[in-house]
Image (tube, rainbow, N blue to C red; front, side, top):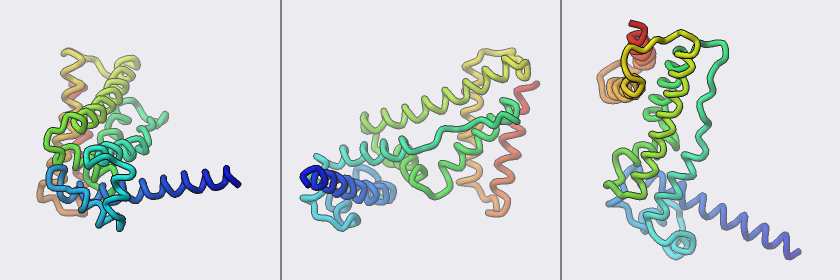
Length: 202
């Protein structure tokens, strides 16, 4: 009986935390870190401010928990063994670009970490950790390309890695901020990624 009650209490606490973080995700995405208040989060979560403070000391702690929860749930990129490393790199670039554009929890959290955090060191750390994962994935695929003789580098490895990162950021900007028709934007994004990566062969 006591074990069942403890489990129920733990489940209820987790449900409340999820309710808070779901609300925080929406509020931080809309208002950014500086303009968001604990009252805003409480209103969207349909909880009292006391309930929020019962789980988190302040909005920074809420923001960190919200971002970590979503980032931890992101499924790592899975290479397709039927494709070459460079083709897998194109697929990875497209996956990254979609994660910044298509409405989802990760899109809202990344938007917040890049646009709405007001240079908070703790939140910047989360953004840098996300970027480090991106660099590791790109470097892994580039090294596989070199090992298979698919890619021969005439310049330094770091520069090529940065070039691949710039493909993601550049195509994202064109697709997200440009005037491409909705029906064409993902087709154009694929073409741009493929064309840009082909330059590595030259």
